[in-house]
Length: 502
Image 1 (cartoon, helix red, strand yellow):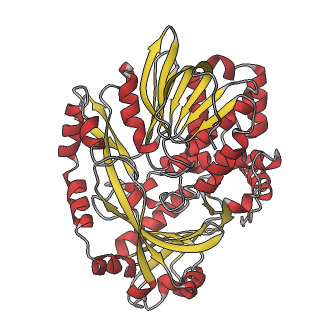
Image 2: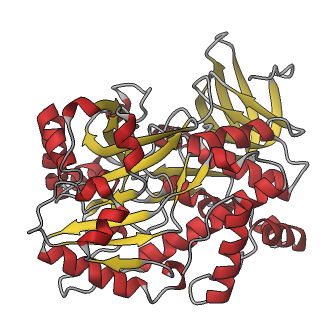
Protein backbone atom coordinates (compact mmCIF):
# COMPACT_ATOMS: atom_id res chain seq x y z
CA UNK A 1 0.00 0.00 0.00
CA UNK A 2 1.29 3.47 -0.89
CA UNK A 3 -0.01 6.43 1.03
CA UNK A 4 -0.48 9.63 -0.91
CA UNK A 5 1.72 12.48 0.17
CA UNK A 6 0.22 15.91 -0.37
CA UNK A 7 3.50 17.66 0.44
CA UNK A 8 6.01 16.85 -2.33
CA UNK A 9 8.94 18.39 -0.45
CA UNK A 10 9.02 17.49 3.25
CA UNK A 11 11.48 16.87 6.06
CA UNK A 12 11.48 13.65 8.08
CA UNK A 13 13.70 12.17 10.77
CA UNK A 14 14.50 8.94 8.94
CA UNK A 15 14.41 7.58 5.39
CA UNK A 16 14.71 3.81 4.96
CA UNK A 17 15.64 2.64 1.45
CA UNK A 18 14.53 -0.92 0.73
CA UNK A 19 11.65 -2.83 2.32
CA UNK A 20 13.62 -5.85 3.51
CA UNK A 21 14.32 -7.37 6.91
CA UNK A 22 17.00 -4.80 7.78
CA UNK A 23 14.81 -1.73 7.18
CA UNK A 24 11.86 -3.38 8.93
CA UNK A 25 14.01 -4.18 11.97
CA UNK A 26 15.54 -0.70 12.16
CA UNK A 27 12.15 0.95 11.65
CA UNK A 28 10.56 -1.10 14.43
CA UNK A 29 13.43 -0.49 16.83
CA UNK A 30 13.44 3.28 16.25
CA UNK A 31 9.66 3.59 16.50
CA UNK A 32 9.64 1.74 19.81
CA UNK A 33 12.53 3.80 21.17
CA UNK A 34 11.13 7.12 19.97
CA UNK A 35 7.39 6.93 19.25
CA UNK A 36 7.21 10.42 17.70
CA UNK A 37 9.96 9.75 15.13
CA UNK A 38 8.95 10.36 11.49
CA UNK A 39 9.90 7.68 8.95
CA UNK A 40 9.56 7.36 5.15
CA UNK A 41 10.28 4.01 3.49
CA UNK A 42 10.92 3.59 -0.23
CA UNK A 43 10.83 0.27 -2.11
CA UNK A 44 11.33 -0.04 -5.87
CA UNK A 45 9.22 -3.21 -6.15
CA UNK A 46 5.50 -3.63 -5.46
CA UNK A 47 5.78 -5.67 -2.26
CA UNK A 48 7.99 -5.88 0.82
CA UNK A 49 10.68 -8.56 1.16
CA UNK A 50 10.66 -9.51 -2.52
CA UNK A 51 14.44 -9.79 -2.86
CA UNK A 52 16.94 -11.27 -0.37
CA UNK A 53 14.42 -11.48 2.49
CA UNK A 54 11.99 -13.65 0.52
CA UNK A 55 11.80 -17.30 1.61
CA UNK A 56 12.67 -18.69 -1.82
CA UNK A 57 15.61 -16.30 -2.20
CA UNK A 58 17.12 -16.62 1.26
CA UNK A 59 19.47 -19.50 2.02
CA UNK A 60 19.98 -18.40 5.63
CA UNK A 61 16.75 -19.30 7.39
CA UNK A 62 17.83 -19.36 10.99
CA UNK A 63 21.61 -18.93 10.91
CA UNK A 64 22.59 -19.67 14.47
CA UNK A 65 25.94 -21.39 13.72
CA UNK A 66 24.64 -24.65 15.16
CA UNK A 67 25.22 -26.51 11.89
CA UNK A 68 27.02 -24.13 9.48
CA UNK A 69 30.54 -25.54 9.28
CA UNK A 70 31.96 -22.52 7.42
CA UNK A 71 31.66 -20.50 10.65
CA UNK A 72 34.21 -22.76 12.37
CA UNK A 73 37.32 -22.84 10.14
CA UNK A 74 40.10 -25.32 10.84
CA UNK A 75 43.67 -24.07 11.07
CA UNK A 76 46.72 -25.76 9.58
CA UNK A 77 47.56 -27.21 13.02
CA UNK A 78 44.14 -28.91 13.16
CA UNK A 79 42.59 -26.60 15.75
CA UNK A 80 39.07 -25.26 15.17
CA UNK A 81 38.29 -21.56 15.56
CA UNK A 82 34.80 -21.09 17.01
CA UNK A 83 34.82 -17.32 17.68
CA UNK A 84 32.60 -16.47 14.70
CA UNK A 85 30.17 -19.28 15.50
CA UNK A 86 29.79 -18.11 19.10
CA UNK A 87 29.26 -14.51 17.96
CA UNK A 88 26.58 -15.51 15.43
CA UNK A 89 24.85 -17.81 17.92
CA UNK A 90 24.62 -14.95 20.42
CA UNK A 91 23.37 -12.53 17.74
CA UNK A 92 20.62 -14.98 16.80
CA UNK A 93 19.54 -15.16 20.44
CA UNK A 94 19.30 -11.35 20.41
CA UNK A 95 17.06 -11.56 17.32
CA UNK A 96 14.80 -14.10 19.02
CA UNK A 97 14.47 -11.84 22.06
CA UNK A 98 13.32 -8.94 19.89
CA UNK A 99 10.86 -11.13 17.97
CA UNK A 100 9.50 -12.44 21.29
CA UNK A 101 8.99 -8.83 22.41
CA UNK A 102 7.12 -8.06 19.18
CA UNK A 103 4.85 -11.05 19.74
CA UNK A 104 4.17 -10.25 23.41
CA UNK A 105 3.49 -6.60 22.47
CA UNK A 106 1.12 -7.73 19.69
CA UNK A 107 3.28 -5.94 17.13
CA UNK A 108 3.62 -9.24 15.27
CA UNK A 109 0.86 -11.83 15.10
CA UNK A 110 1.04 -15.62 14.99
CA UNK A 111 4.74 -16.46 15.46
CA UNK A 112 4.10 -19.89 13.95
CA UNK A 113 3.73 -18.20 10.57
CA UNK A 114 7.38 -17.09 10.56
CA UNK A 115 9.33 -19.33 12.97
CA UNK A 116 9.28 -23.08 13.65
CA UNK A 117 11.42 -25.49 15.65
CA UNK A 118 13.57 -27.66 13.42
CA UNK A 119 16.73 -29.62 14.38
CA UNK A 120 20.01 -28.32 12.99
CA UNK A 121 22.38 -31.09 11.86
CA UNK A 122 25.96 -31.02 10.58
CA UNK A 123 26.80 -34.12 8.52
CA UNK A 124 30.18 -35.24 7.17
CA UNK A 125 31.82 -38.35 5.79
CA UNK A 126 35.44 -39.49 5.43
CA UNK A 127 38.13 -39.85 8.11
CA UNK A 128 39.44 -36.29 7.84
CA UNK A 129 36.02 -34.64 7.96
CA UNK A 130 34.84 -36.80 10.85
CA UNK A 131 37.94 -35.80 12.81
CA UNK A 132 37.17 -32.12 12.07
CA UNK A 133 33.54 -32.44 13.17
CA UNK A 134 34.50 -34.10 16.44
CA UNK A 135 37.05 -31.37 17.20
CA UNK A 136 34.44 -28.73 16.32
CA UNK A 137 31.92 -30.34 18.64
CA UNK A 138 34.39 -30.55 21.53
CA UNK A 139 35.44 -26.92 21.08
CA UNK A 140 31.84 -25.68 20.91
CA UNK A 141 31.06 -27.42 24.19
CA UNK A 142 33.11 -24.68 25.88
CA UNK A 143 30.30 -22.23 25.07
CA UNK A 144 26.98 -22.06 26.90
CA UNK A 145 25.31 -21.20 23.58
CA UNK A 146 25.88 -24.73 22.27
CA UNK A 147 24.58 -26.55 25.32
CA UNK A 148 22.43 -29.46 24.16
CA UNK A 149 24.43 -30.28 21.03
CA UNK A 150 24.87 -34.04 20.48
CA UNK A 151 27.65 -35.74 18.47
CA UNK A 152 27.37 -39.24 17.03
CA UNK A 153 29.01 -41.69 14.64
CA UNK A 154 26.31 -44.30 15.30
CA UNK A 155 24.70 -45.04 11.93
CA UNK A 156 21.49 -46.32 13.54
CA UNK A 157 21.06 -43.07 15.45
CA UNK A 158 21.90 -41.05 12.34
CA UNK A 159 19.15 -42.93 10.48
CA UNK A 160 16.69 -41.62 13.07
CA UNK A 161 18.03 -38.07 12.74
CA UNK A 162 18.00 -37.97 8.93
CA UNK A 163 16.57 -41.08 7.23
CA UNK A 164 16.87 -39.73 3.68
CA UNK A 165 20.55 -38.89 4.14
CA UNK A 166 21.36 -42.37 5.44
CA UNK A 167 19.13 -44.18 2.96
CA UNK A 168 21.13 -46.42 0.58
CA UNK A 169 24.41 -45.08 1.98
CA UNK A 170 27.33 -47.49 1.93
CA UNK A 171 28.04 -49.09 5.30
CA UNK A 172 31.74 -48.67 4.49
CA UNK A 173 31.44 -44.87 4.71
CA UNK A 174 32.78 -43.37 7.93
CA UNK A 175 30.15 -40.79 8.88
CA UNK A 176 29.42 -38.42 11.75
CA UNK A 177 26.89 -35.76 12.64
CA UNK A 178 26.02 -33.24 15.30
CA UNK A 179 22.44 -32.35 16.15
CA UNK A 180 20.98 -29.35 17.92
CA UNK A 181 17.30 -29.63 18.85
CA UNK A 182 17.12 -25.91 19.59
CA UNK A 183 17.41 -25.04 15.88
CA UNK A 184 14.73 -23.08 14.06
CA UNK A 185 13.48 -22.35 10.57
CA UNK A 186 12.66 -18.69 9.96
CA UNK A 187 10.63 -17.29 7.08
CA UNK A 188 12.14 -13.82 6.91
CA UNK A 189 9.82 -12.78 4.11
CA UNK A 190 6.76 -13.43 6.26
CA UNK A 191 8.34 -11.75 9.30
CA UNK A 192 9.36 -8.69 7.29
CA UNK A 193 5.91 -8.21 5.80
CA UNK A 194 4.27 -8.55 9.22
CA UNK A 195 6.57 -5.91 10.69
CA UNK A 196 5.90 -3.49 7.83
CA UNK A 197 2.14 -4.07 8.08
CA UNK A 198 2.28 -2.93 11.72
CA UNK A 199 4.88 -0.26 11.16
CA UNK A 200 2.99 1.59 8.42
CA UNK A 201 -0.08 1.81 10.68
CA UNK A 202 1.91 3.78 13.25
CA UNK A 203 1.71 7.59 13.27
CA UNK A 204 4.21 9.43 11.05
CA UNK A 205 5.31 6.33 9.11
CA UNK A 206 4.79 6.11 5.36
CA UNK A 207 5.68 3.17 3.13
CA UNK A 208 5.92 3.73 -0.62
CA UNK A 209 6.15 0.90 -3.15
CA UNK A 210 7.18 1.38 -6.79
CA UNK A 211 9.46 4.22 -5.68
CA UNK A 212 13.06 4.29 -6.89
CA UNK A 213 15.71 6.45 -5.19
CA UNK A 214 17.56 8.35 -7.90
CA UNK A 215 19.87 10.72 -6.01
CA UNK A 216 21.28 11.27 -2.53
CA UNK A 217 22.91 14.57 -1.66
CA UNK A 218 23.73 16.16 1.67
CA UNK A 219 22.83 19.84 2.09
CA UNK A 220 22.91 21.94 5.24
CA UNK A 221 22.99 18.95 7.54
CA UNK A 222 20.11 17.14 5.82
CA UNK A 223 20.00 14.55 3.06
CA UNK A 224 18.06 15.34 -0.09
CA UNK A 225 16.60 12.01 -1.19
CA UNK A 226 15.28 12.28 -4.74
CA UNK A 227 12.72 9.57 -5.48
CA UNK A 228 10.71 8.67 -8.54
CA UNK A 229 7.25 7.14 -8.42
CA UNK A 230 7.60 4.48 -11.13
CA UNK A 231 3.82 4.26 -11.47
CA UNK A 232 3.15 7.94 -12.20
CA UNK A 233 6.62 9.10 -13.24
CA UNK A 234 6.47 11.89 -10.63
CA UNK A 235 9.72 12.88 -8.93
CA UNK A 236 10.08 14.57 -5.56
CA UNK A 237 12.66 15.28 -2.88
CA UNK A 238 12.39 14.19 0.74
CA UNK A 239 14.75 15.80 3.24
CA UNK A 240 15.99 13.48 5.95
CA UNK A 241 18.08 13.84 9.08
CA UNK A 242 19.18 10.20 8.74
CA UNK A 243 19.19 7.77 5.80
CA UNK A 244 19.58 4.00 5.97
CA UNK A 245 20.42 2.17 2.76
CA UNK A 246 19.15 -1.37 3.26
CA UNK A 247 18.52 -2.33 -0.33
CA UNK A 248 20.35 -5.66 -0.41
CA UNK A 249 22.37 -5.94 -3.60
CA UNK A 250 21.16 -2.47 -4.55
CA UNK A 251 22.91 -0.84 -1.58
CA UNK A 252 26.30 -0.41 -3.26
CA UNK A 253 25.08 1.80 -6.15
CA UNK A 254 23.15 3.95 -3.67
CA UNK A 255 26.17 4.26 -1.40
CA UNK A 256 28.16 5.43 -4.41
CA UNK A 257 25.47 8.02 -5.17
CA UNK A 258 25.75 9.35 -1.62
CA UNK A 259 29.41 10.11 -2.26
CA UNK A 260 30.60 9.89 1.35
CA UNK A 261 34.37 9.38 1.78
CA UNK A 262 33.76 6.30 3.94
CA UNK A 263 32.20 4.61 0.90
CA UNK A 264 35.26 4.98 -1.30
CA UNK A 265 36.95 1.78 -2.38
CA UNK A 266 33.96 -0.50 -1.83
CA UNK A 267 32.98 -2.79 -4.67
CA UNK A 268 30.65 -5.73 -5.11
CA UNK A 269 30.92 -9.24 -6.52
CA UNK A 270 27.50 -10.71 -7.38
CA UNK A 271 26.76 -14.40 -6.88
CA UNK A 272 23.46 -15.90 -8.00
CA UNK A 273 21.91 -19.15 -6.87
CA UNK A 274 19.50 -21.99 -7.61
CA UNK A 275 17.75 -24.67 -5.55
CA UNK A 276 16.55 -28.15 -6.27
CA UNK A 277 13.01 -28.19 -4.87
CA UNK A 278 11.37 -31.49 -3.97
CA UNK A 279 7.93 -31.96 -5.55
CA UNK A 280 7.15 -35.36 -4.02
CA UNK A 281 5.10 -34.93 -0.79
CA UNK A 282 6.09 -38.40 0.45
CA UNK A 283 9.80 -37.52 0.27
CA UNK A 284 9.24 -34.10 1.86
CA UNK A 285 7.47 -35.70 4.82
CA UNK A 286 10.37 -38.09 5.53
CA UNK A 287 12.89 -35.32 6.23
CA UNK A 288 12.69 -33.04 9.26
CA UNK A 289 15.99 -31.20 9.73
CA UNK A 290 18.39 -28.69 8.31
CA UNK A 291 21.35 -30.84 7.31
CA UNK A 292 24.48 -28.87 6.42
CA UNK A 293 27.70 -30.27 4.98
CA UNK A 294 31.12 -28.91 4.06
CA UNK A 295 31.55 -26.47 1.19
CA UNK A 296 33.54 -27.40 -1.92
CA UNK A 297 37.00 -25.87 -2.32
CA UNK A 298 36.63 -22.31 -3.63
CA UNK A 299 32.91 -22.17 -2.88
CA UNK A 300 31.44 -19.03 -1.32
CA UNK A 301 29.89 -19.47 2.15
CA UNK A 302 26.30 -19.11 0.93
CA UNK A 303 26.91 -22.17 -1.27
CA UNK A 304 27.44 -24.57 1.64
CA UNK A 305 25.29 -27.56 0.60
CA UNK A 306 22.28 -28.33 2.74
CA UNK A 307 19.23 -30.56 2.59
CA UNK A 308 16.81 -28.17 4.17
CA UNK A 309 13.34 -28.56 5.65
CA UNK A 310 11.51 -25.24 5.33
CA UNK A 311 8.07 -23.85 6.05
CA UNK A 312 7.00 -21.57 3.21
CA UNK A 313 3.53 -20.06 2.98
CA UNK A 314 2.27 -22.51 5.58
CA UNK A 315 3.51 -25.60 3.74
CA UNK A 316 6.44 -27.88 4.46
CA UNK A 317 9.08 -27.74 1.74
CA UNK A 318 12.36 -29.54 1.07
CA UNK A 319 15.21 -27.82 -0.75
CA UNK A 320 18.75 -28.79 -1.65
CA UNK A 321 21.47 -26.41 -2.64
CA UNK A 322 22.03 -23.67 -3.25
CA UNK A 323 23.94 -24.08 -6.50
CA UNK A 324 26.01 -20.98 -7.16
CA UNK A 325 26.08 -19.07 -10.41
CA UNK A 326 27.17 -15.77 -11.81
CA UNK A 327 25.17 -12.82 -13.06
CA UNK A 328 26.14 -9.17 -13.39
CA UNK A 329 22.84 -8.24 -11.71
CA UNK A 330 23.03 -6.99 -8.12
CA UNK A 331 19.37 -7.87 -7.52
CA UNK A 332 17.18 -10.71 -8.76
CA UNK A 333 15.04 -8.05 -10.44
CA UNK A 334 18.04 -5.87 -11.30
CA UNK A 335 19.88 -4.88 -14.47
CA UNK A 336 22.69 -6.69 -16.29
CA UNK A 337 24.54 -3.35 -16.14
CA UNK A 338 24.60 -3.32 -12.31
CA UNK A 339 28.17 -4.67 -12.02
CA UNK A 340 29.82 -2.62 -14.80
CA UNK A 341 28.08 0.58 -13.64
CA UNK A 342 29.34 0.01 -10.08
CA UNK A 343 32.98 0.20 -11.16
CA UNK A 344 34.37 3.63 -10.28
CA UNK A 345 37.82 5.21 -10.16
CA UNK A 346 37.98 4.75 -6.37
CA UNK A 347 37.16 1.02 -6.37
CA UNK A 348 38.63 -0.37 -9.59
CA UNK A 349 41.96 -1.30 -7.95
CA UNK A 350 40.40 -3.14 -4.99
CA UNK A 351 38.04 -4.98 -7.37
CA UNK A 352 40.87 -6.10 -9.69
CA UNK A 353 43.05 -7.14 -6.74
CA UNK A 354 40.22 -9.10 -5.12
CA UNK A 355 39.47 -10.77 -8.46
CA UNK A 356 43.07 -11.89 -8.93
CA UNK A 357 43.22 -13.20 -5.35
CA UNK A 358 40.02 -15.21 -5.80
CA UNK A 359 40.61 -17.10 -9.04
CA UNK A 360 39.50 -20.41 -7.42
CA UNK A 361 36.11 -18.77 -6.72
CA UNK A 362 35.85 -17.66 -10.35
CA UNK A 363 36.68 -21.18 -11.52
CA UNK A 364 34.12 -22.62 -9.11
CA UNK A 365 31.37 -20.29 -10.36
CA UNK A 366 32.16 -21.11 -14.00
CA UNK A 367 31.89 -24.82 -13.24
CA UNK A 368 28.60 -24.25 -11.40
CA UNK A 369 27.12 -22.31 -14.33
CA UNK A 370 28.10 -25.16 -16.68
CA UNK A 371 26.42 -27.82 -14.55
CA UNK A 372 23.94 -30.16 -16.23
CA UNK A 373 20.83 -31.55 -14.48
CA UNK A 374 22.79 -34.77 -13.98
CA UNK A 375 25.61 -32.84 -12.29
CA UNK A 376 23.16 -31.22 -9.89
CA UNK A 377 21.59 -34.59 -9.07
CA UNK A 378 25.05 -36.05 -8.40
CA UNK A 379 25.62 -33.31 -5.81
CA UNK A 380 22.22 -34.01 -4.23
CA UNK A 381 22.93 -37.76 -4.06
CA UNK A 382 25.95 -37.09 -1.85
CA UNK A 383 23.39 -36.03 0.78
CA UNK A 384 20.43 -38.11 -0.35
CA UNK A 385 21.78 -41.23 -2.11
CA UNK A 386 18.31 -42.43 -3.11
CA UNK A 387 17.23 -39.18 -4.83
CA UNK A 388 15.38 -39.52 -8.15
CA UNK A 389 15.39 -36.79 -10.76
CA UNK A 390 11.61 -36.88 -11.26
CA UNK A 391 11.10 -35.84 -7.60
CA UNK A 392 12.98 -32.55 -7.96
CA UNK A 393 12.74 -29.38 -10.01
CA UNK A 394 15.00 -26.35 -10.35
CA UNK A 395 14.06 -23.13 -8.57
CA UNK A 396 15.84 -19.78 -8.98
CA UNK A 397 17.17 -18.33 -5.73
CA UNK A 398 18.22 -14.76 -4.96
CA UNK A 399 21.26 -12.64 -5.75
CA UNK A 400 24.01 -11.97 -3.22
CA UNK A 401 26.58 -9.22 -3.61
CA UNK A 402 29.76 -9.98 -1.69
CA UNK A 403 31.70 -7.00 -0.37
CA UNK A 404 35.01 -5.96 -1.89
CA UNK A 405 36.92 -3.42 0.17
CA UNK A 406 40.25 -1.66 0.12
CA UNK A 407 43.15 -3.38 1.82
CA UNK A 408 46.61 -1.87 2.23
CA UNK A 409 48.39 -5.19 1.92
CA UNK A 410 46.44 -6.81 -0.91
CA UNK A 411 44.91 -3.78 -2.63
CA UNK A 412 41.45 -5.30 -2.23
CA UNK A 413 39.86 -8.20 -0.40
CA UNK A 414 36.62 -10.11 -0.89
CA UNK A 415 34.51 -10.34 2.26
CA UNK A 416 31.77 -12.93 2.82
CA UNK A 417 30.01 -11.31 5.76
CA UNK A 418 28.06 -8.11 6.22
CA UNK A 419 29.57 -4.62 6.37
CA UNK A 420 27.94 -1.49 7.75
CA UNK A 421 29.37 1.67 6.18
CA UNK A 422 28.62 4.80 8.19
CA UNK A 423 29.36 8.47 7.49
CA UNK A 424 31.58 10.21 10.03
CA UNK A 425 28.68 12.39 11.18
CA UNK A 426 26.36 9.37 11.54
CA UNK A 427 23.80 10.85 9.15
CA UNK A 428 23.79 7.97 6.66
CA UNK A 429 24.58 4.27 6.81
CA UNK A 430 24.54 1.45 4.28
CA UNK A 431 24.48 -2.29 4.81
CA UNK A 432 26.54 -4.27 2.30
CA UNK A 433 27.11 -8.01 1.95
CA UNK A 434 25.16 -11.16 2.69
CA UNK A 435 25.50 -14.07 5.14
CA UNK A 436 24.59 -14.30 7.98
CA UNK A 437 22.57 -11.11 7.37
CA UNK A 438 18.90 -11.62 8.18
CA UNK A 439 19.43 -13.90 11.18
CA UNK A 440 21.60 -11.32 12.91
CA UNK A 441 19.59 -8.26 11.77
CA UNK A 442 18.73 -7.07 15.28
CA UNK A 443 22.35 -7.06 16.48
CA UNK A 444 23.47 -5.34 13.28
CA UNK A 445 20.84 -2.62 13.64
CA UNK A 446 21.62 -2.05 17.33
CA UNK A 447 25.29 -1.64 16.40
CA UNK A 448 24.23 0.83 13.71
CA UNK A 449 22.17 2.84 16.21
CA UNK A 450 25.13 2.97 18.58
CA UNK A 451 27.06 4.71 15.82
CA UNK A 452 24.34 6.87 14.26
CA UNK A 453 22.10 7.62 17.28
CA UNK A 454 24.85 7.71 19.90
CA UNK A 455 23.40 10.54 21.97
CA UNK A 456 19.91 9.06 22.11
CA UNK A 457 20.98 5.49 22.82
CA UNK A 458 22.87 6.58 25.94
CA UNK A 459 19.80 8.17 27.49
CA UNK A 460 18.08 6.36 30.38
CA UNK A 461 14.85 6.20 28.34
CA UNK A 462 16.45 4.36 25.41
CA UNK A 463 18.53 2.12 27.68
CA UNK A 464 15.45 1.09 29.65
CA UNK A 465 13.44 0.39 26.50
CA UNK A 466 16.28 -1.60 24.90
CA UNK A 467 16.48 -3.74 28.03
CA UNK A 468 12.74 -4.30 27.83
CA UNK A 469 12.95 -5.38 24.18
CA UNK A 470 16.15 -7.39 24.57
CA UNK A 471 16.54 -8.59 28.18
CA UNK A 472 20.19 -9.60 27.67
CA UNK A 473 21.12 -6.17 26.25
CA UNK A 474 24.47 -5.05 27.67
CA UNK A 475 25.34 -8.56 28.87
CA UNK A 476 27.04 -11.51 27.21
CA UNK A 477 25.18 -14.79 27.08
CA UNK A 478 28.35 -16.77 26.44
CA UNK A 479 29.86 -17.55 29.81
CA UNK A 480 26.58 -17.05 31.66
CA UNK A 481 24.68 -20.33 31.55
CA UNK A 482 21.86 -19.22 33.87
CA UNK A 483 21.13 -16.11 31.82
CA UNK A 484 21.32 -18.11 28.59
CA UNK A 485 18.88 -20.74 29.90
CA UNK A 486 16.48 -18.09 31.23
CA UNK A 487 16.50 -16.12 27.98
CA UNK A 488 16.00 -19.23 25.87
CA UNK A 489 13.15 -20.40 28.08
CA UNK A 490 11.43 -17.02 27.70
CA UNK A 491 11.88 -16.69 23.94
CA UNK A 492 10.96 -20.25 23.07
CA UNK A 493 7.76 -19.93 25.12
CA UNK A 494 6.81 -16.60 23.55
CA UNK A 495 7.59 -17.83 20.02
CA UNK A 496 5.88 -21.20 20.50
CA UNK A 497 9.08 -23.22 20.03
CA UNK A 498 10.47 -26.35 21.65
CA UNK A 499 13.03 -25.56 24.33
CA UNK A 500 14.89 -28.78 23.47
CA UNK A 501 17.80 -28.54 25.92
CA UNK A 502 19.14 -31.56 27.74
